[in-house]
Length: 371
Image 1 (cartoon, rainbow, N blue to C red):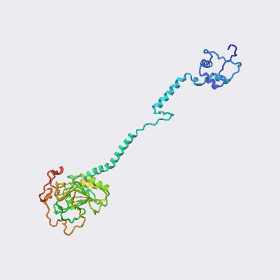
Image 2 (tube, rainbow, N blue to C red):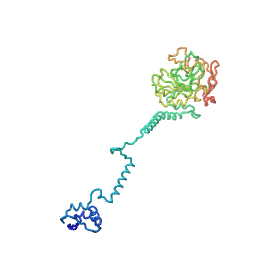
Image 3 (cartoon, rainbow, N blue to C red):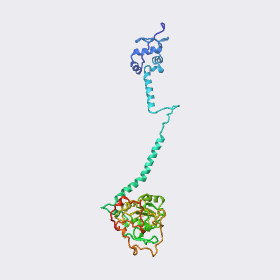
Image 4 (tube, rainbow, N blue to C red):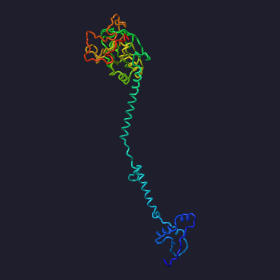
């Protein structure tokens, strides 16, 4: 080392290199060069370079002044490690978990919960589709409820036919009536009424019994079985089944798909979804202002001659010359069936002891006349 020619490492000649070199104190540059060259230097010392020549080699000078590899980062190593840890933590927090091979792990999707929620929503939608229209129809029909100011709301229903008929004209079970309407909705009738406690008859019943039910305040829905589908019949059943003072039966040969009757009133419609059906029922079912026998029952009378499970059949033939005319043909009306006296049972029959009338009819006033 003593005999070696000495050379001083000078700052790079280019302006750019010079600016970078002067960015740090010269003493720090010297210390770093000494560290990586194995020469112990003190701050401010010149760097001796061994070799036989004093000629400058720019590449040699740069390689000596610029350490390589990870050691070139020096004090910046810690900050780089911290940055790597921060990135790793951020990935972990964002769910970017890695599986073997570096691919992202699949996310667990709660398909069971999603499926259950979708099923509930579908059920709600189905119920809404089926129930909301029915609820709206009933709400609309409520406007047709009778009151003191509006005793017969059916006058506001388009298509309702109204006819005055005398009450209490009874015929024998073997007789027929030459009715002026089809289905009939008033006039002479059998002394025994058809059960009308929300009764659905799968087969057509004798009209003379059905008319007597109207005299008791019932609404009779008749339909043409050749024009309605099973689903349409079910729609009508929903209006009757379990609803007291109503009955439903097929009526072969009916000139419209559906006909609705109360005493002295009739409405014919083409659709089971016609809102006027509900309006008619609301306006006239046990409306004490529109039928003769206020307070009369719709329940069956055991042994009376009308069995709801096996009722007298419908007769589609034209009544003969011996049929009872609409004015009764000299039959004296039963006065007990006018003015709200209720039904007078034939041959001294008595109502069953457990038979109860609806609460709104138990104290019904004697009004309604011949409706």
